Length: 313
Image (cartoon, rainbow, N blue to C red; front, side, top):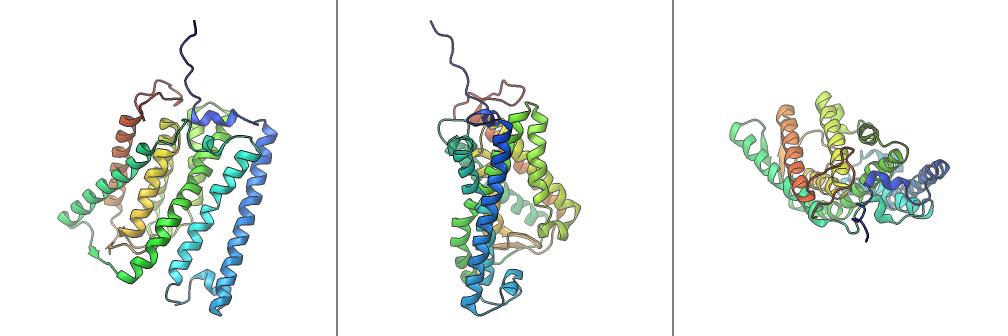
């Protein structure tokens, strides 16, 4: 007679699967760096070719200080693609250096949990609609209709095609590969949470929002970094964090923007003034509502170290 089936390995513990000795991880990080640098060089070459076709100085093109009609669209496409190269680089390292499948750096479950992923979109839509309504009703922000048909439809395919790749690149690097690297060497939940969150937070400190909004932007990025890491550990995979992350980025690019946004897309609504308190409050509400949805979908978590779940997603 056999006992009950063992629960699946926690997502952070998958760093101990496959080839996982310390020197393999050192090799993996080195190979990943080489792949990312190589892909970035390829994108710079593409940018140079584009500049040549336009007959302009590549440095001016890179700075984005030329009035070239659709040049902002090209800038966004190259920016999103440059971050998106992280995803294939991580997948290659996981497969060929660590001897694991790409799925192990995305989820601890046999299948990708689409309902958990979609919950992020639903929550972003609901909280954003409520936030806009409250802002308009109370006069907290000067939100105006800013739909520009030509600009919107120029940005739309770039945002829909490349934003998912950009988000996936960040997720599989910080809350996938880096989390599992940390998980390979420690079982402490606090360390597993804080190290990837700190790395994600640090690379976003150069975004325009930080210069424009100062400490308020820093607080928002810190909250996002910690929450996305927490929900990854809680749900044992990237489905929840990726869905929310993608929903936020698409909303900022196409639905509502504000001064200083790093995602300079073609939003149909624009807040003419920045309200730091209401923005931070909206973000807190967004995380709270999303977490409630995740807990409902994933079910109880009996593991005090944020380990495996046996929910019904």
